[in-house]
Image 1 (spheres, rainbow, N blue to C red):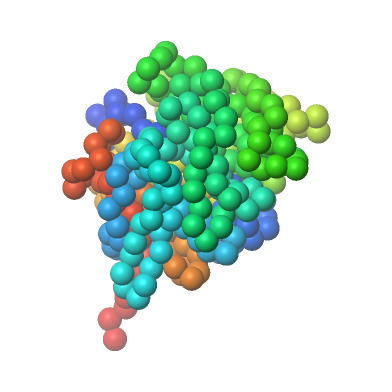
Image 2 (image 1 turned 90 degrees about the vertical axis):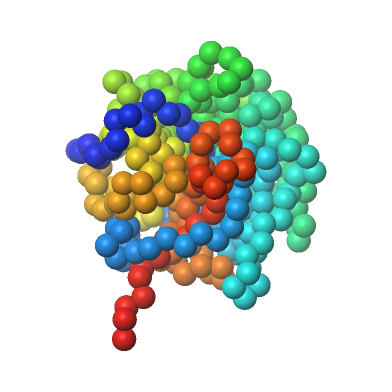
Length: 328
């Protein structure tokens, strides 16, 4: 598969970002976009950003199949709602934790946290997250659902409390109880230096990763018949610190944390379009919208800002990027 670099600000390559989330196959499950990527505006000449809400250290976002929106951040996980033009964020955890990756499976929301634990909540009218498993890793980040009651997660790209230990791990859930973990194992280390976001489409796991020489990349690993990881392969490369991404059709929406922009990468790994440099405040995740909160061509973005800063106006917000209204 062909790759092409994405222009970047070299100085920002020294920064690091955290991310994660879930994706899945071709069905309309709320995680992979079903809109034609060619209809999206991912360019500052045709679109503009609107800030919706303050989310401390905004990290990842995930839609459910019925259009509920969940956003993780440096202190909590929130459900986002709207009444008219007013937006609200309701915390789902009674406490505080640096939450990262999100996944949904069997009407249950899962969230990684940098306390090393996996949290979960059934998607009732008022979900309440609770810790269900100690992962035994220091930097649980990107998270995705998998086949056969499994979850896949990245450990990385770095931990404030331990040396890097880059890998993808697999968690197996009880078929009879989505709140119970029955097994956990190392799935693959191959080619991973700084894994971050994790997505799935069909039987392939995609990972955003810092590769050799600091070059950002998207890597793919096929899930083999026995559940093991197939050989890793690079599907795209670009010069920016990678954070999370999402899948739309056969293309990828990428949050360029290092360059403060978002981009669309085609199925052949080439850059299709991108917003201007510094058009976002260190974005960490981007997804196509879902009704009833958004149009399917809206791009919903978490802007993280400065790592560990939960209060400044730099980042710490949820935004939407949509096509400019044409003048009559």
